[in-house]
Image (cartoon, rainbow, N blue to C red; front, side, top):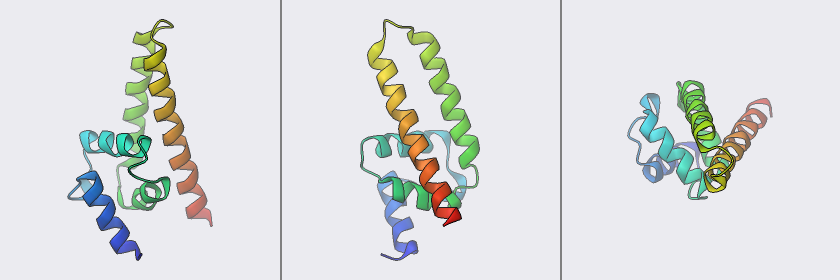
Length: 103
């Protein structure tokens, strides 16, 4: 599949009109779809260069996750597991994106 088609499929799956203007809410949906394997790491990594505010959105997402961790404490293992999964997904996407750019 050509890159243009892949981007269109990504946008359709994620419900995003304009990759140049991805909102926090749309980014959260991308993360959720990636965590649920409805979007592959390759699909997300392929879209990253077309999302100019990706790092800002990533930083915001991580800050939100940190807040969840602080509130959860040790008694909320399920919440911590969700956070861990999300962070692992984000890390894999960043690693794949980095490898794609340098390769």
